[in-house]
Amino acid sequence: MQEKERQVYDLLEITNRQFNECNALYHAAAQRCGLSDAAFWVLYALCTTHEPQTQNRMAAEWGQPKQTLNSAVAAMVKKGLVALCPGKGAHSGKLVTLTDEGRIFYERAEQLLREVESAKQQLSDLGSAQQNVKVGIPPLWGTTFFPDLLHDFNARHPNIRLTFYEYGSARAAALVKEKELDIALANLNQDDPESFQSVCIGRDHFVIVVDPAHPLAKRDSVALEDLAATPLVMYNTDSVQNNAILSRFESLGITPYIQIYTSQIYTMKGMIHNSTCASFFYASLLEDHPDLVGIPIEPRIEQKVGLLWRKSKYTPSGVESFISFVRDYPLFPEEP
Image 1: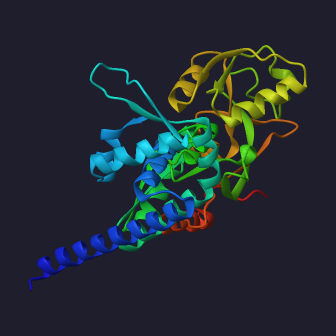
Image 2: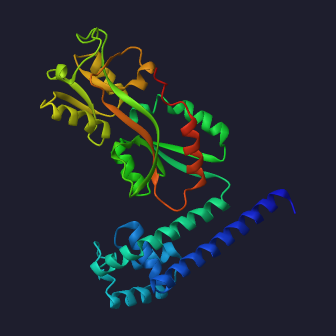
Image 3: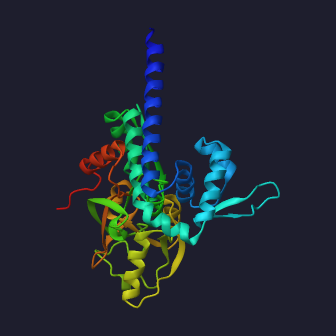
């Protein structure tokens, strides 16, 4: 057998084994829920998509005969777990949606569904030559740390494909929870131990950044009270950093003068250089922006920065490799 044919044969064998093992997982989970396999697939589809679906769509996506799936839906309607509602279009068909009783049933079965999802991911990892990991990163760090990190990670782990998405910490955490991202580098001040596992990889603090010609540029330090009348460029409202800074202003009884909210470094720098605006940067970012003057804030506003990923019995090996790599990577300079 030619080498290429052998590779194709091996891939088909792995795929077939995964398919059979996944089917066995779903069958066992259905039995533990007291449902038929098709009814379990209906429940699983509705719970993982978080939206009503047509029977035709579920039958197509789960590879089930329409008659089998329609019979399962009819049985679930009798049990009060789902209801059939009119679709939005004239030809869209009826939508299957969870009832209140169905939601309660789902909440009881949710841990079991998580175990099934975890086992399915583990099987997928075992049979995959290349893994894809979706990583959320703070916008301001996208051009600073991550080009070098990505280059070094790819050299060490050529079989893991990283894709970076820029989001504020709060939005990134929400997307990790919704399984749109696998992991996020984020501010840990909003960590949710019920939903996430996390590891702190460093601590940083904010400094005020201004243009060299700004009146504050020659100061050795500033207090937030000194900024009451200074126009500020702030992070977008989905940013945990933003909340940390604004809550400190609020504790002092100060309403800051915010001129613009943004997540773009070039917008921030443009406003700083072409006006009397000031902004807040992590101290670790200053080295890459020598055209800005960083002034320490007294007292300090410190932040824990780390990695967040979903709490699960099984963490994909690609995510584990990224965690291990980032923990040892010098993202934050050592302080004296």
